[in-house]
Image (tube, rainbow, N blue to C red; front, top):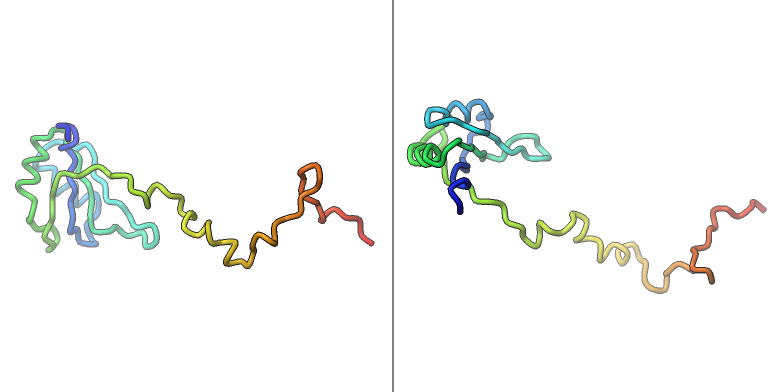
Length: 133
């Protein structure tokens, strides 16, 4: 991990009332901040109890970690560490619909015997354009 990576801190254990401004105010005494973010849950719109604080310098981030890890904010004990970069896992590399794609047609009762009829020129028949009888 390079020196640049050690400027961003993971802050866990956040109370639900803590927002970006409260988190910024808690960490600004330790040095110049570049960014403060608290990821939100897509479904509820509330944060998930953690955030990230990025400092200008690794030294300031180290001092904040030393002073704020196991410290309190809004009555909750904080877990402050150097943030680790996200890793690509097999699960995160797959499309959201991938899990159901292989079994979708089987669930719908379609099998190989239900394959569409293809004409001699390779086109699918267009039954929707037949003239009315």
